Amino acid sequence: MVSHWVSRVKLAECKRILVVKPSSLGDIIHTLPAVEAIHRAVPDAEIDWLVSTDWSPLLKGVTFLDRLIPFPRKEFRGISGGLKAVTWARTTLQQTHYDLTLDFQGLFRSALLSRLTKTSRVMGFQKTREGASLFYDEKVMIQGWSATHAVDRNLALAKAAGADIVSPSFGLPEGDPVDGLTSIRKKPTILLHPFSRGEGKSLSTDEVIELANQLAPTPIILVGMFEGNTPDTWPDNITDLLGQTSLPQLIHLIRFCDWTVSVDSGPMHLAAGITDRVLSLHTWSNPAMVGPWPKSSWAFREGEIVQVVDLTPDRFPERRDLKSIYGKQRRLFKPDDIETMTSFLREQLSI
Image 1 (cartoon, one colour):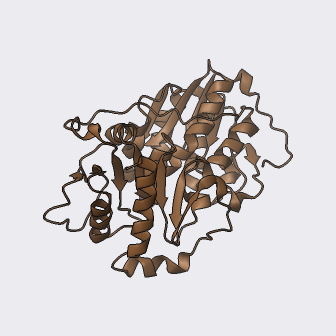
Image 2 (tube, one colour):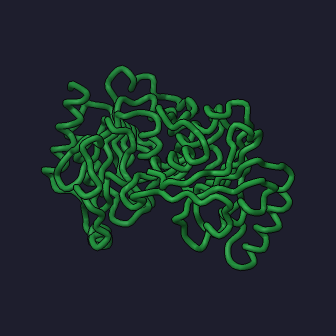
């Protein structure tokens, strides 16, 4: 996957390593296996992670990280914000000398922050945006970039740095318990994340109700954020936790439930970092590229449920031309599609 190229990085000699990956939720999840592989290669090295303040709770409790550096991204918007970010970096990042800084983000700001550290070498991808690669000492070319899942790209960067990427692990913590769910656990339970900020990806409340009714009496825990109007009452088998869970609690709920069903979103990738019992729902996005990474997970698109191991990048190509069309539709999926999903889940849960 990595083009023939010899790195000057001597990973075995690195005592302090900085990972730069500020956002977003899914992207941070996709980076964890690469960082875990680096930790296995140099278990005595201290690994710090620069992460946006909003997402730092996700990484608390990750055992192979020594320090989180919260980056207040929202404070540094615009031209003046850029100058403030430079000042922040000089004050915060230059307190520690790093032997290696890895920029997994590949944007101008992340590359600049990487360069502003006291670091011996900065490594990142050859293919970046906004001229980010100009700041790197080591540029890693990934063959077949556009047909490679983000987890595999990041693992390739770790391999180029000198890590063994066999049997990668996400290493996510146990999470924080959610009260009041003891009675639910007596039955197989589904975690449903039906809404996304991405255009043309969110289920309608009618579709959520159809799913719940067809799966009844199987308990369904509803999570995520929803800006619309929810029904006055949900079906009896739904426990509504919309807007009520922290990231550590979401991790716990994924472990608590038997299956996670999610639209294409960050929480779907979080679930896939914990379990392979994930069904990812896609409209216009390519499940081979942006779906769950574990080969034994599942994805739905165009009336079919396919195991990830059987997906290829050209099976369900990305259809950005349909993005706005899906965004304007009253519902994403036909009744037959809902029946396909619920039949699959009933079979998996043996109910």
